[in-house]
Length: 217
Image 1 (spheres, rainbow, N blue to C red):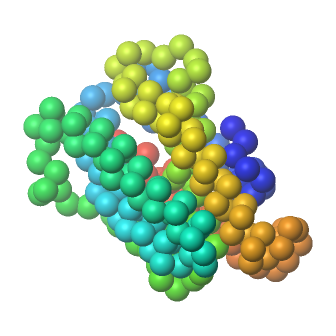
Image 2 (cartoon, one colour):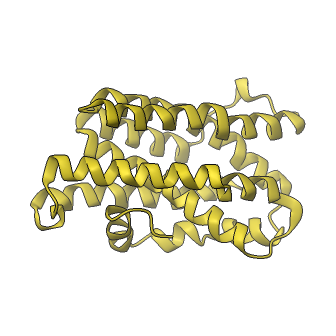
């Protein structure tokens, strides 16, 4: 998938991108071979992840420089709270998982705290670079799996991330990133030293995303 201008450039520089979007977990989702227990373990941890992820997007609203950026960031917070998290709650509750007593796995702690630290210590560009792999990577995965034949076992998950609504969110996020980059670094940011710092944020978050799949065991 090609979301905006900045994302493909970041993705090309992230060595772990294929490990993330074409992980064994993703392939097992598509063909239905992923054990249900492993999927529910991942889903429960992802619920905890999304709590911190929503907080990070709320922080992006604070870091925004104008109303356009604030609206885009707050729209993502709304989508997380009202689109993604309800799916997690529904599936986990149906499986008898008590989400209120879950303990965060080390991989979860590492990823979520990295993203939040990027926001606390950096500017909006640092935070968006750390947030982007999750939003846009899931969009790429969802679109690919939804467009190809897949087993019915995890069709609801695939439908959520391959849906027109989620894909629209991805395009809006890409537009936010492109606009934020242009406002702060101009039309050719990749020629600046700052580009390398932000790209490394994206690459680190991508590695943490790839490791997150290993929770499903």
